[in-house]
Image 1 (cartoon, helix red, strand yellow):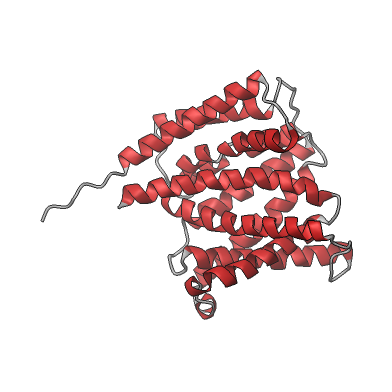
Image 2: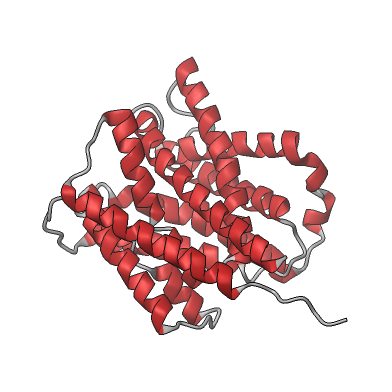
Length: 303
């Protein structure tokens, strides 16, 4: 039933934002021990192995080379844009701007914009109002206690990163249907491995990780690999069934989960402003979920 698929898609995107939140926390453990592109190709390599072991019955490996040119190009573009270019720009932006400024640029609703421009999705007044409401809540969360945000090189990099991530999400809805979600997750991750490995070799001039990896770091990388599997599958499933303009609101939940994990791992308390912003995002998300569930109810066809 269409209603159930949409609800499951929305749930998948909510879980996806939780993974994004915990991924940011884990990145702190990696940053001092291993290079940027090295950590990504290692964790994506682990993710590929896990997909082969767990989902080998759902992945037609030989068929991956037989799909249409359009499908293959979309897979390659999504893998390289999302897992290599966008991730690299995001990491680089944090070196030139404050975390608050970077976060604000990430929550600009480019997913909704591309959904409207590329997919021609309808932008009703109600949906636009909810997108704007969620964006206001995200601004309150990201800017903490009214910190002044400037717009410079770092902010521009973060904005470009967020736009590229949004493009990969929107391009999911352009896939032809030749590949299932497990195959799409495997193929895009494979491109992510290749792209990050090439970048790591070009930067470090070494075909192996430049620093030794401790057993604890391997455990963390394994956990990150598991999260990468979930991230790939959930994003493919979620954007298969949920409109990009709707998903734009749900993705702002990443900031909410970021605050939760920030408290759990670092005991970082919410400011009153962040609490208000969190409530606003939750209201917008719950309202949009309710409206989409009602709108997609399919009446039984007459006999």
